[in-house]
Length: 123
Image 1 (tube, one colour):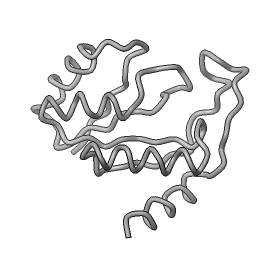
Image 2 (tube, one colour):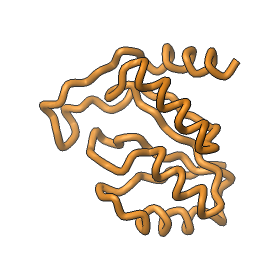
Image 3 (cartoon, one colour):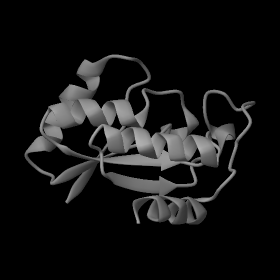
Image 4 (cartoon, helix red, strand yellow):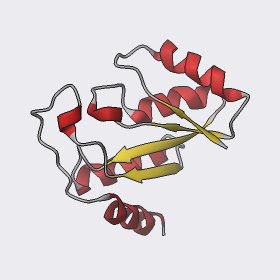
């Protein structure tokens, strides 16, 4: 069973800690959203690390909206180096819905292509 944790629109780790403590007794792992609703937020990998310190098993969500294939692979290596081994590959919410609608989406890969890249890296 997993729960979802949306990172704050700030750098305050206590927000993540509070949410993680609420989830801790009810889930086996927690999903951390990545730029949920195309809003600027704490990175999902950072919130995963904070939740991991609270004793939860993180699932990092990674979207293709803001990263090209090089950046996505670099982030996969980074989260693996932090001991975050569960990844949910997503295309991502369109940026027009967020707090910077004029931002350019990258979408170098879609979620299915990204999933293949991650699988190839793992294997």
